[in-house]
Length: 572
Picture: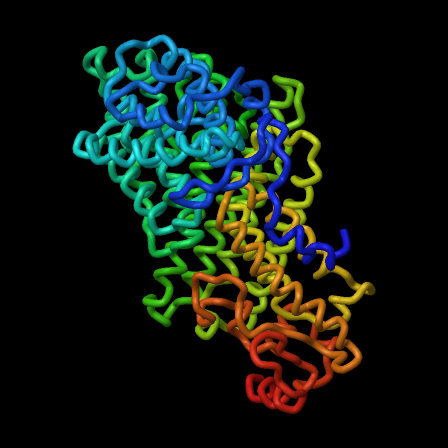
């Protein structure tokens, strides 16, 4: 696709995409916020309602005191299908779909907490439905949930944690980031208050009344376990948009990892290791039995979220660290993180290979590798470069650039993957974290270069922007953050395209003074914080320029060639 076409009016968020899963035109925006534009999904495609849903006049009948299934059976089942189809865009389902829906449709004794959770699921499902006649339901269900949370907030429960996680996802999808952080934080705090971060806590079931959703003891325990880990993962990856937020420390979690999704859905819950070290040891020994072989995708996400959180937390703390010994401590930390990432990657590939042998389906690794390279890129990019020796700066610049390239390479592989419904692929194509990884990678790749890099003779930079923009366009179907990232990227692309048209005026190097998106200042950014000459030297590009006057800043107020040369000369 020509890069210029990515800036066409139709690609800038105007008309909604067609959705074959619903027979009616797309809904209007609910009044409480703009809803994400849904994409086609697999499980809900055969789920369309046989006739019109509850009329708008009877929407007022829904209340946190009334079971919605008793009020409208078809609509409830339909929207639950929508919910379960789209919740997979964050992690594996924390609640197994079939047993839960069976319970919703057969149980006549639902607690107020149960009803609260069902309404939360319906609210999210309604947001992703494009049936026009469901527009009032999205708003009403959201209001019902808000009232129910106030009524049930003093009674900690599994249902309350789930409800707050769903409200966090809804808020995040609509761009209400602070509210999303508040909901996810309260979900994590509530789960810890229930002692779900400890194996003893999730296993503490003393009477049948503590079982949920018609599950048996083993399934209830695994549901509690997965609920805590889902809250943990969400809190860790909140560091993408608010690094000051601290997730619970992994050392405070004495809890088995989640089992495989298939086993959870069937209700045959195996014993699983407490950490990935034990799991990896078993995988190295070739074991697919016992504790080592039972960790599922959610367990791998727990480990990646843990590493990601440690990297972001260290970046935040680095401003207050002593200058003395900074280089040595940084090298040790980088070595430790990369060793853990490599162990994670090897274990994941073995697990996926075994899964492929079992079910006969190809399980690609490119999706989770986006998270791998995103974590590594942050690790190397955001450092106190003023307190580092030149050789260490060179290593960090090169590694940040290399991992940025790898992010976009894996994004392209995932985008071209035929099996869009594979868990790893679906996760990468729909997770909001992918959007943050893409914008960070593009920010690094486009930070500086030569005009040759932008022209047809090179094409590497423009190709990267094209890959990133197309992926961000898909993510806008789910997340408001992706829409912002898309527009910021388009602005940078416009500037780059303008520079190519002026190549005859300055045939040297270009650079941007400010990042597209960064949660840390330039003092903690080796890509934008060091001088352009040092940056070029670190990447081995010094032979492409002849003097400081060859540098031309593309953002901000347009500088004259002489002014730009003076600024670059002073900086070097």
